[in-house]
Image 1 (tube, rainbow, N blue to C red):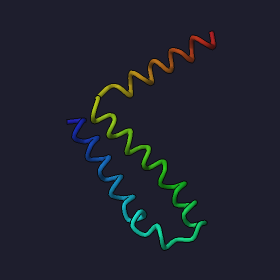
Image 2: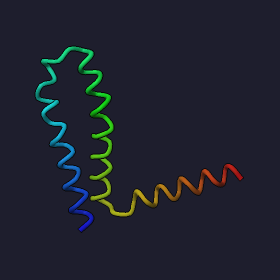
Image 3: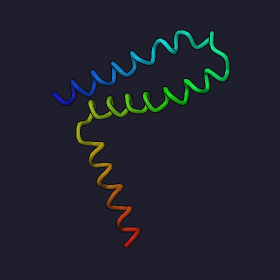
Image 4: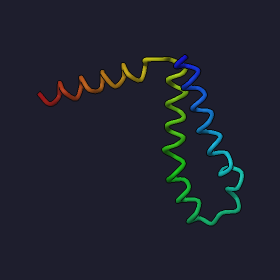
Length: 75
């Protein structure tokens, strides 16, 4: 069930960003930059949702490995 939930969440996030892509040509450069700053984190989270749906647990393992490496460097 987590795979389906993560994939569905990723699709919803992409659907929220699609109207911006359709109207991109009608915006000024300042509006484009500000929307890009808002949309990039949303697209990153959507990508992480799809990654988690494809391989459940891989993000948690990567976070644990990163934490262990950071702690090994500190002490």
